[in-house]
Image 1 (cartoon, rainbow, N blue to C red):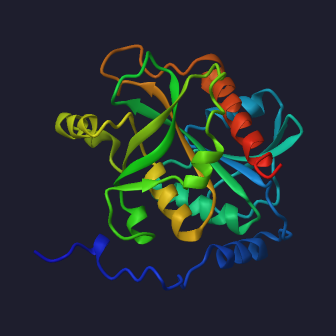
Image 2: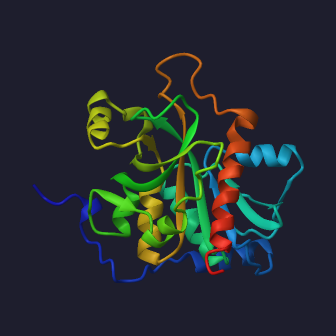
Image 3: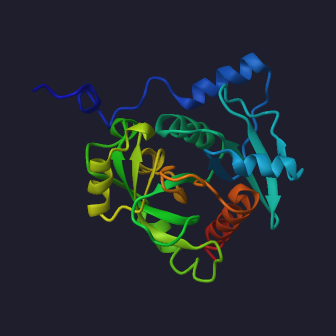
Length: 264
């Protein structure tokens, strides 16, 4: 059997001909936008619930100079820290496309908070998992790193977060997730395999984001917001107050303070 295209003709040491910097340059030219940096700490909100809540409460404003063709960037302040946030960048390839553009635009730390289905039950949803590693059942990660079973968070970022969630009311655990490109192909056998590996939830971005982060040496921290049991029963997908936004913002606040205070 020949090697499938996803695993062949990958020269990981060579740069890409097509770059995020050049794409943004042309977008700024076409849209007549100035060259401006995004906030140092940015957030990916694949569900879009955090963005929608911030906008509804008039706490976030759209950045008119964000040059991405596919997304809107919003800025907001929390505890005197400015954040940039992008909603609805769902899936591995879309999340990494946006991550590339954010880091090319001045981002220094990227935090992803994505909704996820429960695999190993820790408690009644909703709760969060700080993703230490993610099973690479998607395609994007294989363009950044050679084939392995998991992508991993940077050990230095994991150490930075040691003990930070002990008093947190949003219930944050640490562990592994399964990143899939096909949410409606989560078969019973695949779920049982993940359960045997101790995987806590299934989501769609983390494996690719961590592979990008390792390959590009960029700081990325991914959380799975365990909100559902894959709709096996009615009444699933309840995320809590403000569609889970208040708890998610609390988690983001804790991470950002740890990041800012890491050198003090």
